[in-house]
Image 1 (cartoon, one colour):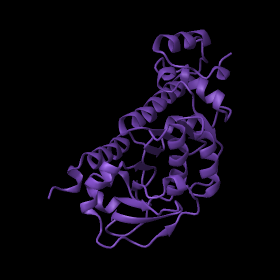
Image 2 (cartoon, helix red, strand yellow; image 1 turned 90 degrees about the horizontal axis):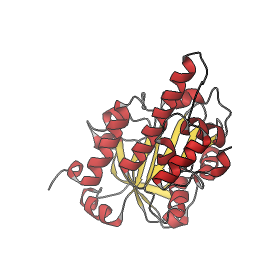
Image 3 (spheres, one colour; image 1 turned 90 degrees about the vertical axis):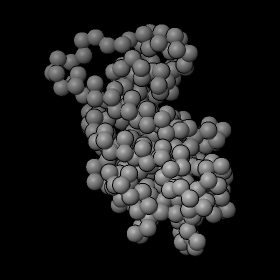
Image 4 (cartoon, helix red, strand yellow; image 1 turned 30 degrees about the vertical axis):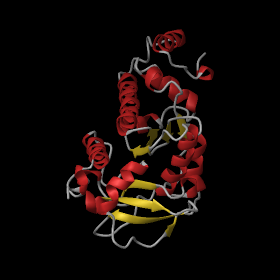
Length: 275
């Protein structure tokens, strides 16, 4: 039998963890990644499941429409830099019970542990994004990109202010995230409050900024989701570089320029964010 890491979905998941580490977005045990497996992927992975799954654990949140689903998840307190070295010790596959309010580990975390402390937040946002995309969204990714975090100390914490600043920082941004980004004010991570606040933003946006903390993004596959995180952070880096030059902004991409980009690439910008 081939190794579990030879299965394509596992290979792609591990690669994304490593890519995030190499970008510098995952200091220590920072960040988390979850993926909702397709039925075919679950069946391909099933031969590797534990003979005896672990006990059911209540999540404190509920989404009946995700009952019976399986998720890949990083482990709580685990380091992204170690996933490629020993995936069986740092990530896991969890099964959701039929009621959609508990999980159990069916593979991974061989040296002990549990899914990321943000799993309830991920789970609820998977439910929101799945409904918003007719089931297409499968990836939720949280990381700590430094330049975007820096922006949360200077810009007003509104979706409009962040979306405009990012759109105007790089020409590709209105194409990659024409709907803009949501913003969640600082909250204690890992609890129901931040889960619900993020869900509210993710009903509308593909990405939500967590003030003074990081970025939360979603997508249909690993490449799209990683690309969204990467594009937003690159735009944030440009914004920070411009502000650090001390000259202020002398010229930028104007609103009608943003509209022209949208027209050329066939996307619809959130018009209420434009003047």
